[in-house]
Image (cartoon, rainbow, N blue to C red; front, side, top):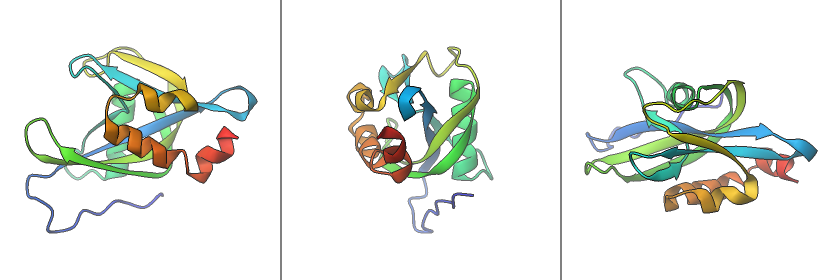
Length: 151
């Protein structure tokens, strides 16, 4: 278990809770690639994520959402961080992200995700639409699990 994100009891009553994954897969020479998704409805490149179901932990939601959006079953490596922003409908939103290794499955376009690309570590930041995702990825590349594989 990687621990669980705890939201303070005084968080806004309308806080949207979501979770997602930064999914990696090994490639040649000890390097790896990162999955980025494109959502045509929102016109953005981001990481797979979605809202928690009732009674679900952030980690459980992250694994479920990644599977639903990418078609891939993954394993959590560690907690990666959060992003916080105002949702397009004006509500506060927090998204807990987990660094994940890809397991089985294969991507197919679906209701939420139109495209998935695997990018080299050096290409990910420039591919992401949102500053908040770029800042999160800046933290991820400093993690020992990523540095060890990136060197």
